[in-house]
Length: 368
Image (cartoon, rainbow, N blue to C red; front, side, top):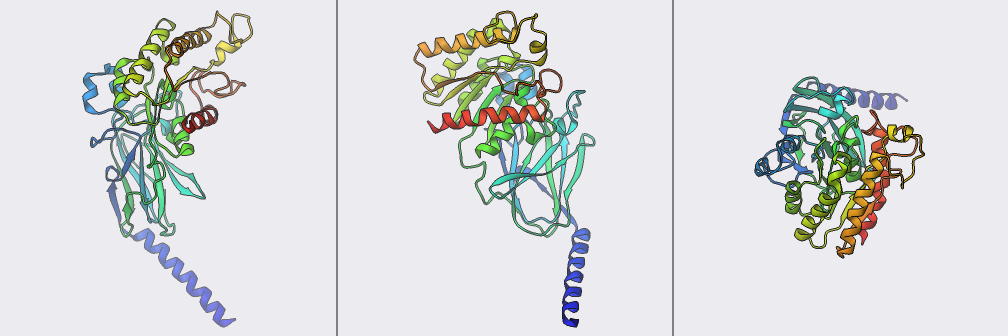
């Protein structure tokens, strides 16, 4: 019994000393740009979604939004017992309908039991912030995924780890060894209004598909543009998703959708292309000019957008454009109209529902 007590005392003393060491050990800062940055297709030393030359190619509004880091993430490996995130934003934006943690925060995942597991969100305090994710953990090597802000850009991102920790590029190829998907769309695609970056549906899909997604969601500016098509043509991707109905007036959807698909097909002869309809907003469903919500209704804006995109798809199919697919907008965020924060932008619930609908659709297309 005496020996057992001595062993127990020794173990408790060792644990206490280790914990004290972890608390007192100096912190070193490691620049995240030296690790595996995913979700952008160029090799420039920044976290922007488009390379610098596109400032003169796309409209100013699109370029400014491309500096937001939606869909951009960092993959790394470390045995750190303590991790904090220190980052500096480009603009320090705030919106009344979206959590600041989604606009300007970062969230950290680790790979365990065959899937990515959420740990904590780095919450912004100002243009430059530092947030302690965890401390006093065991020094086990783990694979990590750090998602960057959805509606702001970053000048820099640093990991603050205990001085004895090793931080390297990933050892495992999670999210790294498959061709990405590019998803061109609206503010919904960009991530509005997820509560944190990892809950944007494109980021959810990336984790589920084990492949990164180039997020070309531009808030209010996703309108089937040829200039964005030029960027898509430069990307080596497994699939192209075009999701521009939410931002596009009915007068432009038909012709621009046709032109954009033709443009992409010319530069990517075999890459699958998926045209995605918008979903119905709650106020269109609740106040539909005293008529029920039917797909063939002609007097509701969102339905008219469906009709324009569907007509474009029919023309393209008649042109025998292969590997072209179409996904209807029904049920994308559920049928109870509880999936948005402001009538149009999804909450985390709406984002999760979108990912759940699109995941099998994308898997089926890629399997072909």
